[in-house]
Image (tube, rainbow, N blue to C red):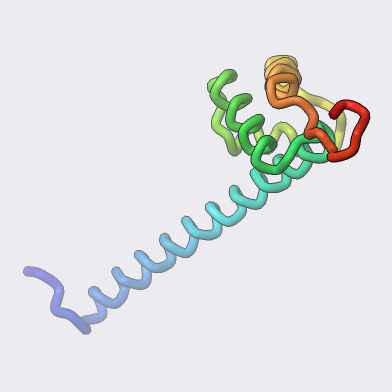
Length: 110
């Protein structure tokens, strides 16, 4: 027998669904913040534009076969304690070399 709309069982099920959705949105928001912070570190330390920072992070993730969020977390840990797995460091250096430092207008390299 299907639950009748407005019945306690139906309302309880809807509350559980909404709680699960809120939890999922919280995880997504936290993940987005971690990725943004890692991009910020890449931009500052690699002297690249924000869109290049995103590309660098994506490249490292793809070349190491590690989820982007996990790569971002490792970059943040590196920023705190200076430790980074060799595989990530090598790929990060390679990706930064591919995208190179952003040229500043009026700089000697122009």
